[in-house]
Amino acid sequence: MLSRLVLQTSGARFLKTGFSANDGYKNSPLSTSCRQTRAHSESHGCYAPYMARAQVISTFCQPVGRTVWDSAAWVTYYESNAKNLGVIPWERGGELSTEERASIAASVQDFQLGESSEGLHLQRCAKEWAEKTGDRDYPEAIRLFTKEEQRHASNLADFLKLNGIGLISKSWTDALFRRVRRMAGLELSIRVLLCAEIVAQVYYDALRDATNSSVLRAICDQILKDEAEHVRFQCERLAIFARKHGAFARLLRNCFQYSLMTAVLPIVWVRHRRAYLAGGYHARRFAKETWLAFRRGMAIADPSSYE
Ligand SMILES: [Fe+2]
Ligand SMILES: [Fe+2]
Image (cartoon, rainbow, N blue to C red; front, side, top):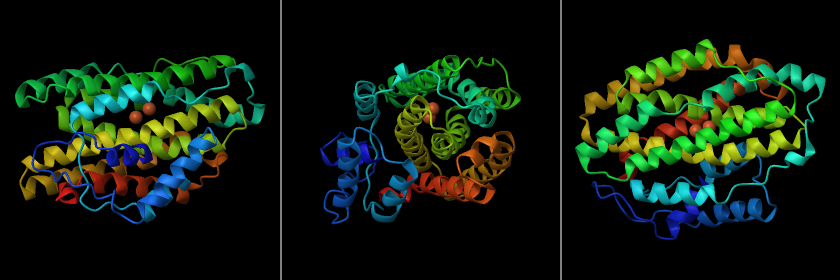
């Protein structure tokens, strides 16, 4: 999100669908704190713990007159992000203690599988959308987004192998998630996907704190940085869709999104509580932080934020 802030103030291209193109961040006296936070993170060669950054953002960086990136700007972002990845110290080898392994191994296997989707259905939907609307860069933006998810899967797979932990090829939550998305059109597919992105924002923060493995911590830092932008990417798209819907249709969709997130939370907690607990997230903190991340996402998905 912070990288977006910096990119936004440096003059990216904006969508021409009625959204305001004024730069609400640039003139905000508070935007300096945000840039300083990013500068601090970068000067230390790492990203500071995500939730601390998220707190800064949510407290100080509520944008006024925000803008939505067009697909070409997202393509530029994803290409640039792929060239600026954090260093993962693979040479440190498998550092997981027996205790850490017991807490997180099964959970990481599950998330690794979830990240590994090829996104073929989403890419098909994106092509149809491009043909229908003339948004020709959107399929490429979706392709690059999927590639990032696959990088996450690949990094987690390498980490598991490094620690002598096998990969899994099936889990009922992953199967359910993929089946629902396959049945859906573009918007519904993004709404389902968004729940996973929101969960990831908090999960990887917990996972980072659940281990002393420098490899896993570096992987989590990178994923957290990526996921913050994934949420924005998907939520901005929902805001674009919402512009085309009437008030009642928007209300229905929001109800669906809130219901879906409410249903997802207990499933995630039951399946991954050991990892969350090891990272200092008891049930209440897990629910609170995840819900906060969800509310931030819903604010981005609200088209009135851009008017
Ligand atoms: Fe991911
Ligand atoms: Fe993601």
